[in-house]
Image (cartoon, rainbow over all chains, first blue to last red; front, side):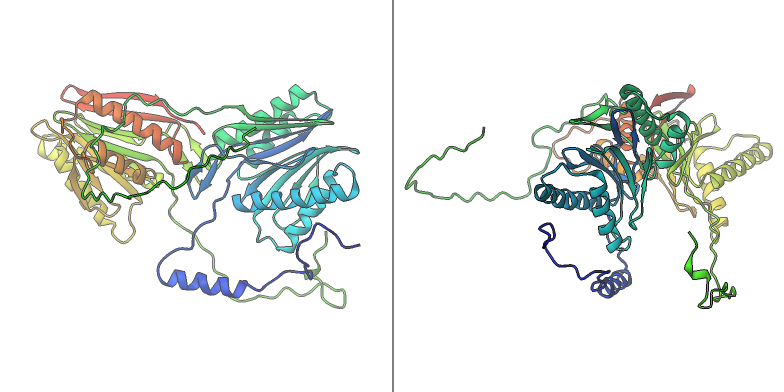
Length: 277
Length: 237
C-alpha cells in the first residue's frame, strides 16, 4: 500500500546533486573576499528526564549568530503530536523544519493507523531522515513523549544515531546540564522534583555556557495531559536603564520632501465583515 | 562496535600506513573576550570595563576587571588576549617606575600614551593581541582618552569603546556624546553624573546581545580628587 506521508519518491541514499555547485559557489565567494553567510545556530542547552508519570523536557531560550545574540526569547521545544514534543539544538532552521516535517507526516500516519502516535515512530522517522542527509542537516534533538506503552525519551544526533535513555542533554551547554543530572537524577521521581531537576540543569547551562541564556522553558508530558510552561522561569531579566533615550520630533533631519496628491474618486463602497471568532 | 576500516579483506588487521604529511596547528593567541569603554569630560575621565573572562563557550572568571590603575591620574583598559594583557601591564608598570626614578616625576597621560605606542610597535611582527584604551587627566586637568590598535596606532579621543562589544557601543556613544546623526539638538557639555549613567546603560545593552560581555561592570572615575571605583551587576547568562 502506498504511504500517504511522503510527497516525493526518494530513490534511497544521499542526493549529491548540489554538492559540486555548493563547493564552487563557496570558492567563488571566498575569492571575492566575502564569507558565506553563517547559519543561525541555537548554541543551546536542552535536556529531558523520565519520571514517575511521564517526561519533562527543558530548554533555554537564546539563539546566537556567531557570538551575538540573535533572539533573546526563541522557542526550542517543538510540537510533534499532542503527546510528543521535541527540543532542538544546532542550526535553528534545521531543527524547526525537521520537526515540522515529521510532525506533519506523523499526523497523517496517525490518521492512517487510527491510533495515538508512538514516540518510537517519531524517533524512527527522524533518524531515517537525518541519516539520509548524512549529517548535513545540523539538528540535534531531544524527543520525549508518553504513548500507550509508557513514557519514552530519546536523544537524536545530526548524523542519525539515537539513544534511548532515562535522562539526556544536548547542545553547547549539555556538559553543564549533564553534570547536574549525574549528581541528582533518581529513577521514578515525583513531578515537582523532576521539574526542579530539569530547571536546575538548564540553569547550569544558561549561567555557565555562553551559547545559552535568557529563560527556562519546560514541557511536562503525562498520559493525557501536556503542560507547556513558557516561560517556566525567567532566570535573567533585562537590566533597567536609568536614562531616557527617546528622540524629540525633528531630531531626524529631513533632506527633501515631495508631496504627490493622489486624486481618487470614490465609485463604490462595500463593507465585508471578517469572521474573527 | 568494531570498525570495519581497520580490517582488510582476508580478515587480518591492516598494516598501519602513513598517509603523508599531517598539518598540526598551534595558535599562540586566544580570545578572552571583554569590553572596555572610556569617556573624557571637561574635568573628569571615566574608564569602564566588564569583569567577565571567557574562552570559547566557557567562562574562566566572573570577576576579572580589565581596568588597570597606572598612576593617580591615568587608568588603562585592555581587552583581547588575557595573557598579553597581563604581560603588557607588567611592562608598563616597570617602565613607569623607570621614568619616575630617572626623571623624578610621574608620567603624564599623554606621555604614557606615546610610550605605549612604541611598546606595541616594538612587537610589530608578533603583536600583543590587546585592544588598549587609556583614560586620564592631561596636564591642564582636562579629561583625555587615548585609543590604540594592537600594533600601536593611537589618537586622542573624547570617547571610545574597545573589545568584543565595541561595534555595538561605539555607534551609541557617537549619537549620545558626539550628537551625530541628530538635528535640532542642544549640544550640552557632558556632566559626570550623565556620563556615569550613560556608561551603565550602554553596558546593560551590550550585555543583552554580546555573549562575551556580562557578570559585572567596573567603572573607574578619575577626577583631580583621585580615582573612585563603582561596581554594578550585569546579566550573568
